[in-house]
Image (cartoon, rainbow, N blue to C red; front, side):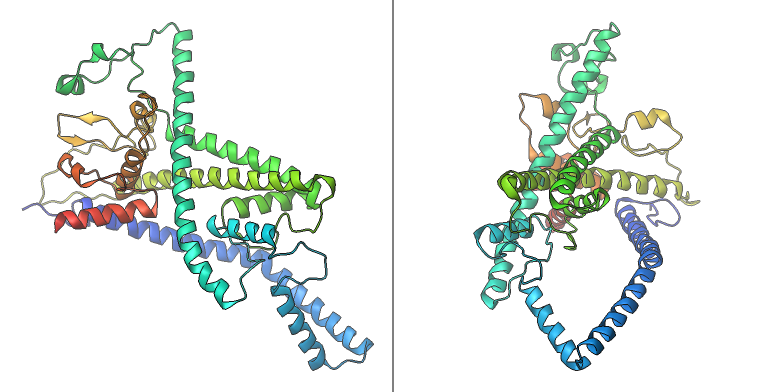
Length: 415
């Protein structure tokens, strides 16, 4: 009987998932503790200084105007209530006219949630629950579709550049399907050495491109915010990251003044487009980075693997897309490959995102393929061919949605 203990003979499919989950949880806890220590060291002295300065101003104001501290505190509490309702000393745009409400629902469905505008009535709060439930789900689906299409475009451009580079070197591409054959024979032989059919762009290359795109969008948006809002450029970059990553602290919010001069409509349109492009780009970047983090966890699990004395040793065959430092040959194969078929072992090899053949075959890009492959990658194993009938166009998913759907599908199969 084969030993399945994770501590003595490596990690089976279930134990490997559990080990990856535990490692990721520990990493997040350590990451939170380190972040808390850094921010506490940076911000706590500033907070103490601000409290001392406010106490001095409060004391001086009460003595100068001969006001009791209790009366002054009541007045300040009333102002805080008015501030929540949108009334401030500075003249700001109305929060609940149609344009203000449109800006509010945009922050709701995009999950940014700046917090400068919140419903105060019971009806508004109840309506927000149902409105946000459907709106956030639809927006997440839109982000997933955007991710699929941007990766499609990147893969097509990268393959075209690779093909052009090969032609300059005098290597003629061989894309003919007849040279490869069909069925099991083609799967066993694999793509020819000079063929581009099996070429895939690197995940790291896609991540770099998305990172550059996010930086360019943020820099352009920061230049606009600095010129129109009057913010410092570094503060504008800070706002862009907080907004584009949907963190949305609300300490800085764009397009809140009552008037912006003659270019008010153009600025608000540019603000909307920059936030839309930035959120989509950062969302895609987060998904790609999560895949890289998962591959690093896989590599750490294999480094921690201890062979069992009671079990026959099995030759370790690393995943095609596993991050294996020190092995350049394996690193070159880290790619967006999800549709390579291996007839020899009867299993479908799982990769990272989307197959190039799915990208380029008559532009018929299937979202279910990417959802299934990303969920397989997140779970660390592939489904056998017999289980493919259990998947429909809603199977898989991206991120937490993919993991949940995959787990539900496995539970239904077991039952």
